[in-house]
Length: 366
Image (tube, rainbow, N blue to C red; front, side, top):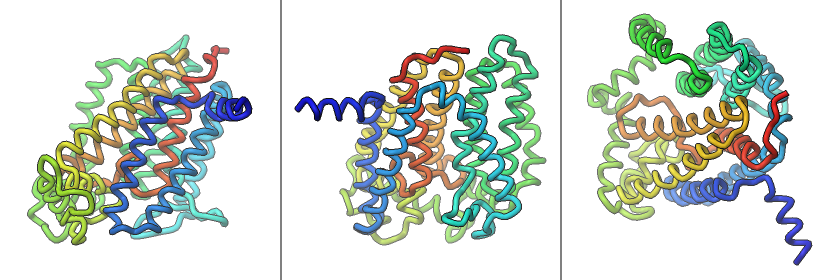
């Protein structure tokens, strides 16, 4: 019995139990919905369980890394990610008109996923380094660290990932004390430059925005996803149609029902009550993450924890908004629910950093 306690202590001492319970709850919900969304495909569910297991191991490993080591990894991780993005631009594989993957011999990787963590880490490190003499030029320097990778990702093209990475970087800028006057000025500039941005967009990106305004203009083409997901969500009603009884799902009217549009499957089968409980589960995880952020001891840990938390919220908001028809379709998975390994690993890597911040001795600035 004593040996079992020692083993349990060794494996759990750097794991935040409250956060872990919330994560596992969402994962279990994801497996239940995936089973229905995939047409009772046991193989697909089993593969997702493997993805989850790998992601949980990575989370545990990262949670066990001391904060000082995580801080030292910021610059090498950013440099590696940026170099891989440049490699994608020159040597990346083209799939469906997009150049997003890089073949490294033993496997294919998507470097933009690495940057979802590397950019907030790098920017938090940068602001921590300049904390004492923080000036406007430091904010400009941090913005450059953000914009160069975002530009490379936009060129792939991958608008959804670029926007999410830009958001994660903006959260670091905001939490580092960027003036509201500058934020308002940048917002006005962004709105004023919309005609220029519109001209730079690809045709399919413009079509997504036009479809948001009126999905019925192309019901069998660009508007199909939005129309079918809206029907699925609305038909769920208060209590839903029941697990594996969603007609939009089981009759294959709903596109990408295991990945980006899995929230529509959940809404149709579990209704408003199920959606409320799902949102509560997400709020528990987000709330715990904010507690960890508030308890962070240094500028670096506070910025990285806050950025990870707000980025997690952004994923949820964008996916649910996209599926509900209030945001354009940008291909963003629902965190811990959608099928897929890459996003799962990235998300739990971030949670591992949060657990390290919470459970390790406080980082002393040197």
